Image (cartoon, rainbow, N blue to C red; front, side, top):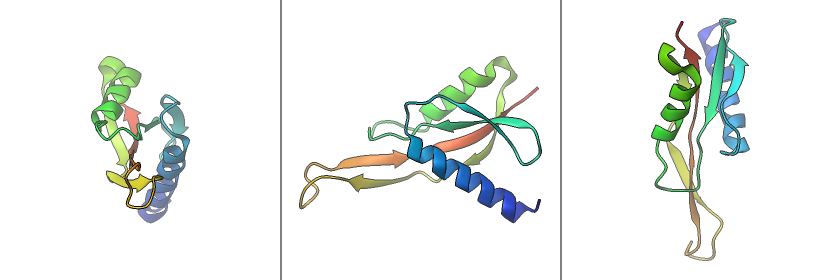
Length: 103
């Protein structure tokens, strides 16, 4: 598989994970190399949430072995819902990444 297909596959996986929300923990997945990895979604409507939540989950999954980030979404966000003028809108941050535990 070429790099373009691999990148497209990882981007599509991350997009699907972003739609699932934070309720789920890391999900085991297979990487294009055939190795196993974990998809981590730490998207949030809480503007104070940062990438630290993703890194914390990655550390918990891989433990003392450590991990490598295979792919990571851009830190994008948008205002959703609310009324005219966005007075009651929510700032939703989409954050997800795919990791591989070191061995």
